[in-house]
Amino acid sequence: MIWNYQKRAGAALLLSAVLAMSGCAGWGGAKPAATRPAPGLLGADTPQVLLLGEVHDNAQGHKLRYELLRQRVEAGWRPAIVMEQFDRENQDLLDKAQKGCVDAQCLIQVAAGARWDWQLYYPVIQLALTYQLPLVAGNLSRADASRVVRDGVKSSFDPQSIKDYKLEQPLPAAVREVQQREIVAGHCNMLPEMMIGGMVDAQVARDIWMAKIIRDQRPRDVVLIAGNGHVRKDVGVAYWLRQVQPALTVRSVGFTEDRENEGRYDAMQTLAPQERDYPCRQVRK
Image 1 (cartoon, one colour):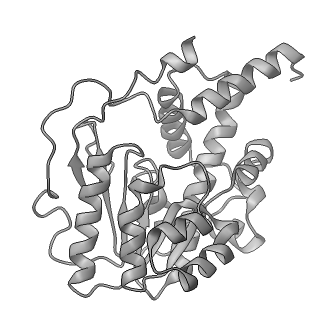
Image 2 (cartoon, helix red, strand yellow):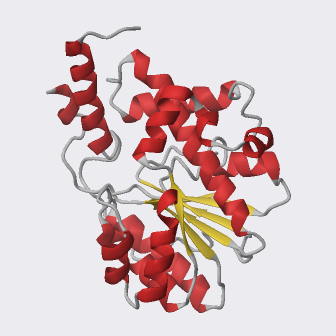
C-alpha cells in the first residue's frame, strides 16, 4: 500500500506517541504498597533461568524485584543478568563499562541509552557490579526493530537460529493472536491496521533474541530483567526457550498492576498502580 504524505506523517506521529507510552493499564488511585516480595514467590528451589518482569515505570515493582534478586545473590547465587534495557549490539560497550566502573552511575553514563529511567535500574546494576555478575544486553535496537517491522521476524536472525526456532514457517497462530491482542490494547486500540503485523513481529523478535541470548549464557544460571509481556510463559521468552531447550528449568514472575493475569506467569506479585497521567490521552489528542 502506498501512503500519501499526510498518512505517513500521521502514522509517524502516532508511532512516536505510542512508543513513548508505558501502556494503557494501571492508572488510577494507588493502594498501600507492599514493602517486600510475597512469601514463596520463587519457591525453595532456584531455577536455571529466572524471568523477572516489570511495569516499566512502577517504582514499587522495581524495589520488590530487586529485593527478591538481592536475597538470592547474597545467599550465594551467581547468575548472569540479561537486561532488556541494553541493546544487544552495545555489548562491547557494556563489557567495557563493567570492567572500568565500580558504581552503577558510572556504568549508566558509559553504556546506557536514553530510552529508560535508569535510576529505577540502579540497584540491580550495582548488585551486578558488587558481586561481579555479568550484565548482558538483551534488546533489539530501534534500527533492528524497524527492519523486522519491514521484513519480518527472521530478518534479524542467522540461518541456524531460523532453523532452531522454525522461523521459516509462519508464527504459531496462538502466539500471533495473543501478541496482536496485547499490542492493540496496549496502544489504546488506536494503531493503524497496517502497523499491527509489523509491531507483532518486532515483539516476537525481541522475545526470540532474549531466549537465544539466555541460551548463550549456559551453563551459567540466568536472570532476565524485562517487561511483563516478555516474561510471559505462554507466548514470551519462556515459550521460545521451550522450543529449543525444553529441559531447562524456567520460572517466570510477573510484577503487575493487573490481578487478571492467571496463566501468564509461574508466579505473580500484584503492585499498587503507579500514579501517572491517563496514557491514551497522548494519542487521542
